[in-house]
Length: 221
Length: 221
Image 1 (tube, rainbow over the protein chains, first blue to last red):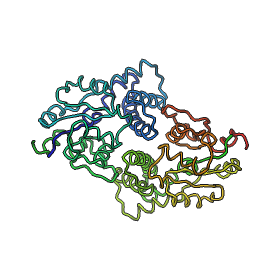
Image 2: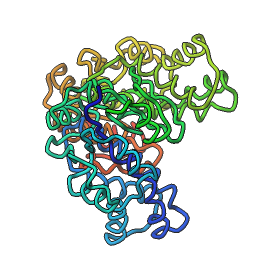
Image 3: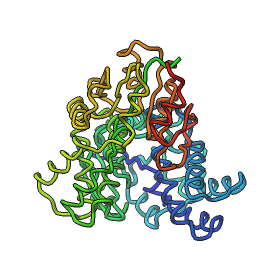
Image 4: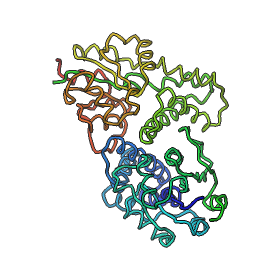
């Protein structure tokens, strides 16, 4: 029944909070705070720019949200520091079970569908040594908007040529889970930290603690 | 030059954190936390539902975001408690300078443009004794979407019959300031708490600490 598995990248395959160390090196004692506010603002700016019809790509949004964060915390910074922290997004740590889980989901088609630019995504996947697992790495960038607009999820359907209910969409982000389920995918929520369920009117088909659990729940192809 | 003044309601005229007392009565010790998480989730859910094309009106979004908040804080509640807290939104406190400032902006046309439903808005305005100041109270509800989508701001232009650059749009919410400026209004940011400037590519025309300061900056009609 599940013909293809499409993964969110940031927070699902890759730990966005693994930038904490780089943030802490640049601003000792502030690593955790920076990584948390940065992530929250980064998401807000994608939603707001999509609604405002003022798209800028994820590299720019990531820079803007980092600058907001450093301004907010009243930290002094220069361009070099900002670029160093942005580069940390190109070598985010992946969660420990990722490779084993991707292997278990095969021989289905596997893809990434993410807000990141193609450059950011191919680089972070390559740095993690995961390139060979994916048939497609899909960025929202050609659409000039962000998740959870339905047309973003439609991109996976069009590119993979698989009906949406036969696509398992996998995300650890509650709002992405809601958006993809409202669109019509079969959806797995990777709820690693036992987060509170979002009240957005839809529920995922599967709720698990990690990717490997999800691979076990989905019957073999 | 400024022919009409259009106000955001929640956070700009009315203090959304004035529900803290009602929250604290229902859940002693949790008032501040509830009011803060509730507001953040309420905004997120408007942005997400607008992007997902899954509009529900602000009464429903407000209920959903409150439920998320209470679940998140692991607080026990029943329907009566939820309705009591939702009712607090109908009698939010207005900021102390509001009446004097509205008087100073006259004889221009004055309007409210808000995410709230018409019922919520007319009730909170009436409970604050401010009804007579406004020519129009405009809700996003007929458009079935939320700020900062450009069509929401266009509603004020169409209804008031005033060109957008001759409308002063007033908000204390940084994201609403960005959205309304990107749309093309003349914009005043009421930055009461010295908040960090949002990095969304546009800047307001005026930054002030309260509504009365803004009325003084705008030359008399």
